[in-house]
Amino acid sequence: MPALSALRWSQNGRMPCVPFSSMLAQRAHRCHSTATEDAPPPFMQRIKADLKTAMRAKDAPRLSVLRAIMSASLNASKTSNPIRTDVQLVALIRRIQKSSQDAVSDAEAAGREDLVDKENEQIRILDEYLAGSGVRTLGEAELKTLIQDAIEASKNAGTATKSLVGDVMKRLAGALEGKDVDRKAVAGSVKELTGR
Image (tube, rainbow, N blue to C red):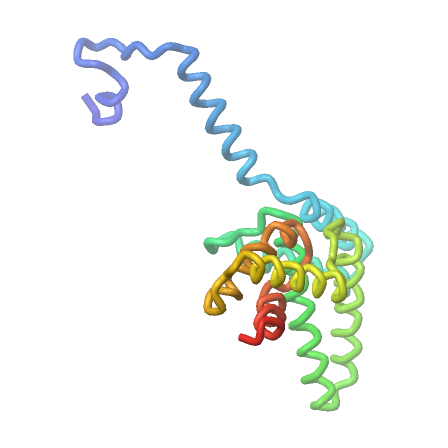
C-alpha cells in the first residue's frame, strides 16, 4: 500500500471516522484566516484599480508611480512587516516620495532638467494619492501639543529622567495609532523637548 494511502486509510482498510461538522469547521477556519490575513487594505485596492485605468489611458507618469508603489508593497510582503493597513501603505508612499525628492536634488546638481521634471511629476502624483488616502495626517502644531502633553503626564507620574523618552513614546502610541506620522521624527522631537 503506498504511503499516501496509508495516511488516509486505517489498518482495517476503512477510512477513519471524522465527524463531518469537524471537517467543515476546519475548512471554514482555514478559509477565514487566509481571507482576512491576505485581504489588501482598501487604499491598495484603489491603487490597483487606478493602475488598470492608467494602463488603458497610457498615462506613463501615473503608471510609473503606481507600479513603484505595487513593487514596494510586494517587496514588503516578503519581509516580517508586510503592508496590511492604509497607514502602512501611506508610510510606504512617503518613503517612495522621499526617494523622488532625493533624485530631484541629484538631478539638479547634475544639471539634468529632464530628470528634474520627471521626478517632480511623480512627486505631484504621489501627493495626490497621499491627500486622497483617507489617512489623517497630524499637523506640526498638533503633534507638538500631543508630545508636550505626554511629557507633562510622564513627569507628573514621577517617571525617572533616564526612562522619560520611553515613557513618553508609550503614552503617545495610542494617540498616533492609525495616523500618518513619521515615528522617527516624533522620537527626535521627544528627545529634543525632554533634553535627552
